[in-house]
Image (tube, rainbow, N blue to C red; front, side, top):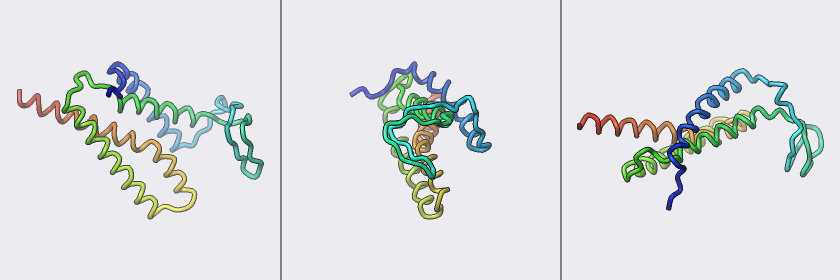
Amino acid sequence: MNYLFPHRFKKLGWFVFIPTLFISIFFVIYEKEYEMFDLVVPALFSDQLFGKSDLFSMVKNNVFDEILSFLLITSGLLLAFSKEKIEDEMVQKIRLESLVWATYANYIVLLCCILFIYGSPFFTVMIYNMFTLLLFFVIRFNWMIYKTSKISEDEK
């Protein structure tokens, strides 16, 4: 079963992922709002603070964080699930092991946060948790591919 994107998508993934990651980190640190991203957008559900809840409505929202989240997730998926130039059994094994490792690491971090972080900071942790599984996987997978290529070069 072929569940991977073609290799050419990996370049697009890197091209979007790296700048989006840095912009996202900057956005989180400085909490800057950009007025040009204040738009009226459709909402399946909206709940205004001290206001009413609506289903299927139009709301005014700064969509900068949604754009960053969308780009980070889609580019991360392209990075994580695009074929390598040579997609053999070793790469598939590394991909699977990296996915398992990233899942364990992600949930260990989340369990620690559940035990030690409370209130609204925990909500922030849950938001970041949407991205950490992909981030852990991309880092681990590419590190293991790099290590494997170094070992095979040394053997030659």
